Image (cartoon, rainbow, N blue to C red; front, side, top):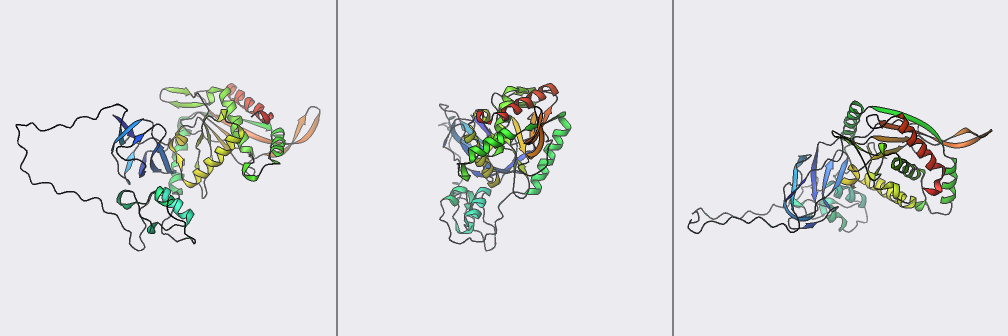
Length: 390
């Protein structure tokens, strides 16, 4: 019997609050199935199961705040037999206690006027987006809690209905979580930094030509090229791609590129694009758009929050010229892209106006050194010079 425990969803997580079950006892689950929603300081995260089998018991109730590693459920492996229930011996008479009074099911909680309805964070966000009054819905969760599925099946209201629910993240708590994680990173990880200014003109021209005939929703962004070039460079210099823990460095077999996403109202998350080094640019761009949208609506998955092997953070079109970022443990490197700017650039015997970007690598000195870091930046530079090959 396997125990499904509260996972760690980042270096800054100590506990999480269970806000929604997606499974019931007796359900069959497979690896990758979303089985629960847990609220952390970085929002509501969909928790995936990494076991196959049948749900035997649910060991936590909605609203419980549990430490990382605390049991959430037990899962019986395929083919595993249920432990037999002990039966009383025939020669022992049953006790003459009064018959137990049947326990009534948990009553459905009906919110009073002005009271916030019981609902999961994901349900609140979607209800606010669709203008649905949570108090008007019948929740199917424990105690009548409104779940995401209840909101998804509800008809849209023609006019938004004001609700006392306040969807969204606790930005103060998120800033505290980020501060704790970054303080730990700076204390424990011996950072070193290398910066290089890269000629971005070839990538800029190719991007403009590629997007010329595309609709806005299918156009590529420079950020996609940055992520793909970083992933290719990380695949060539494995000392930048992996995790460091008490047992030392563990290089990753694939590049799961964390993409730093700034949330509205403040805060930052860096969910991972899996196998970024193998994704065609169009696919990578589509997945980036989806990742950003779900990050800002609080619907990320646990694997996206924990699988990152190297992180990319970019200032966008406007911002500082350069950025030296702090490594997000247990990763060992992060790449910061400043805002692209036009600079005079020497080409042969002439000086030309070129679009450039300053790239800063922050790396873990326990795993690599400046020589490896320089090799990584050279590989990243080379990738951006041939954007058509990305």
